[in-house]
Length: 422
Image (cartoon, rainbow, N blue to C red; front, top):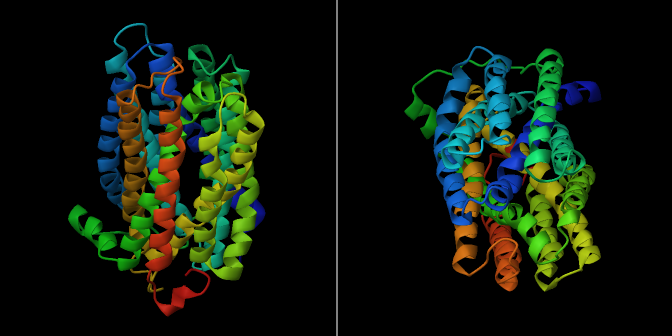
């Protein structure tokens, strides 16, 4: 099969930019915005994030099933994007009263639009090629735009007035404009799946088929462990920068360093996966993440240069988490090369996205209340070591566990797909 041109890959990847811009505030900025700026109790914000994220996650398999029965992937995405834009604008511009109800309702609308678009978008990419290495190129193209969106989301609030109510409200309008622009590029110019969407059968059948695939079950177990390991520091990073490093004015710079390094690392992991296989390359990325990040526990006030170096090295490791798991998943979906499951890609990605959101929900719903129980409160400077423990040591232990599971219980696939994957 002829490889896709750079321009065609870019057209497909473009939508990843605004989708990432929406994702970052949902798990990085919101806890600090509603707890720090608007005064809601930290444990309450964590509980709202947990409940709404779990409800959203539970809906993902249903949305994946619906996406497989929609006539065309791009039409399903087009129906989702207005919901995402409206939800984000509401989320980042709350009223002066009724914050609890407003936060919950805005999260529901935002999550619905984001989930519909993300599931169909990922399934679209999984169906663009039968070649295992071309799938990694497609995933890498999407994730490069994703990281560009994350960098914009990390830097823009500070440039627009600060990581506060003013800056984030302005960011919401910038996001809506970029969402419209990138949607036009992807929906009009991106290559179409080489197989049409033609799934049939009921919801229970669509849910059972992926879970009956042993390769998918093994991959999902690794993905959950690794995802929780990444979600905990993502949820707590702004608190760590403010109360441990005591450098809140540098939070945007640290996030930019991390995600730019991640973008720079993606081509390296793509090349490494060709040489040693996707599984081994992913294990190497996990180990690099632990070696780079564990030193954050020893940091204290003013250690900004050391934390910047940690951001760069752990960002390079992030490239493996972005480029490789979804590419391996595309291989697992197409495991028998007969196309019997290709039309069910939405169901696979519905469950995959459920796991992604469950990871974030667990991180917010467990880490934030745990910190409150340990006596930590944002901005008060107490229990800084407890914050460092939850922020750093716990994720490293989880990451080592996920690497061990992936190495000891490799994703099982037939010989036709083993080359370049295991």
